[in-house]
Image 1 (cartoon, rainbow, N blue to C red):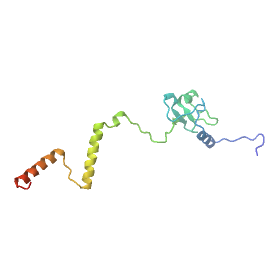
Image 2: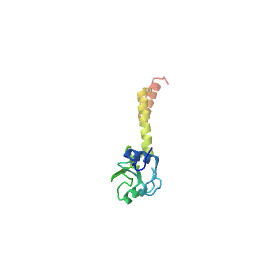
Image 3: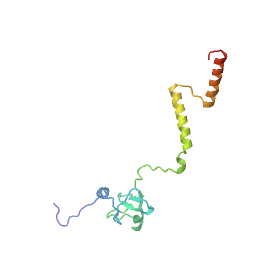
Image 4: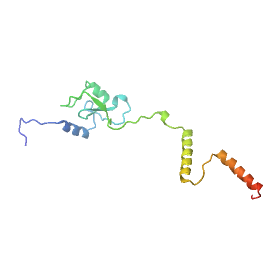
Length: 141
């Protein structure tokens, strides 16, 4: 039991645990969302104690953590420990590229199965016609 005059000790671990329970910014007390539509609401995390902030709120607090006992002046993007993948419109294949890739994959699959020889449609027509003409010439067709 505590007696009057004893101090409560708050450790960095205590602060981190409390931050995991709350997703509200300590400056504006509004929810910090993962997918922010506006740049100023992008979530950032105190590099030392892990407190979530809106980017603008961090800047308004003087670029330092507002949590009692934390003296950090560094932040990182929320989720920075995860790998970030950036995709641009040029990375998305066109319909023609998708069709071409699918044809190539089907050809490779046929080759691996060995079920039929892989020839282009032009050469298939030529060889079929030639073989048909030879069979006709010998009276086999």
